[in-house]
Amino acid sequence: MPYNYFLFGLFFLISSCSSNDNPFSYGNDTHSRGNMTIYVEGSFKPLFDTSINTFEGQYPKAKISAVFGSEDEIIAAFFKDSTKTICISRNFTKEEKSALKKKKVEVRSDKIAEDAIALILHPSNPDSLMTIQQIKDIITGKTTHWPGLKIKINVVFDKQNSANFNYLKKLCDLKKLPINLFAMNSNEEVINFVKKNKSAIGIIGLNWISDSDDFETLGFVDGINVVAIAKDDKSDYFKPHAGYIFTREYPFFREIWMINKAKKSGINTGFVLFMKGEKGQLIVQKSALVPANAPVRLIQLITE
Figure 1 (tube, rainbow, N blue to C red):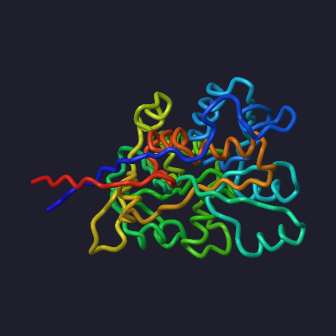
Figure 2 (figure 1 turned 135 degrees about the vertical axis):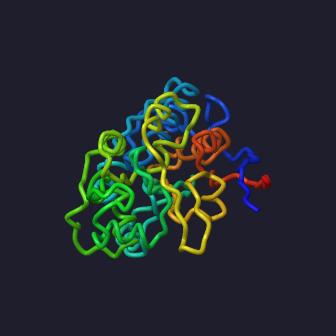
């Protein structure tokens, strides 16, 4: 009997900025006042555009500049001290933490959400149900043509060394870029390319198409189909909805981490606390992602 999951968040207030006057104040830089720059993986741009606008609206004396780029570039910038706060799709490795410890750099890592990799197709493509193995065969070039369309497959993703690409590289154990893979410059370019090309399959961050209440997101979703994925040919197929990410029935899930080495009293830490707290987690939920710092419950709706 088929069923669907719907995800609900029961939020509680986590220690965050509850007023415009923060008790932890050193000079002009506080949890709610000051200037900061954050480097963010491009997959999470819609989430952070909304979050930054909300934070600055709540705290008029706060100014946050976001730099969006590929995951590897962002990590390199953090180690070069180009920024004190970043957002990527994983926590630092033991080796990365050890390198920072040797430099006597105190780092705080916080998981703020879970999202997923989404695969998208042109609406004319009937091959919208795939197993993990079928996807691996397409990405590695073992499968070169669409069965339903009888045309050559082109795989497009945002850019090399991005979180999306790193996920695929690990999934398929890629040692080099297959000739059927093409890099764009952003998730948005991937979406637009797929809309115009019947042969394409696009790999993007779910956050770009997950918020059904956002006008810009609706524009992205119009003109594409999202692939439903099964773990194998004996399993059910699931699209990347929050409930299926939470239950792990959708297999291509991942995490969103904020990593910070700024002082505990400053604006950088204030923004991290905001994202971990009630309002930030509500933004995560509204974006149809899975909040990290809120209890959740699933309601199972059974349909005939």
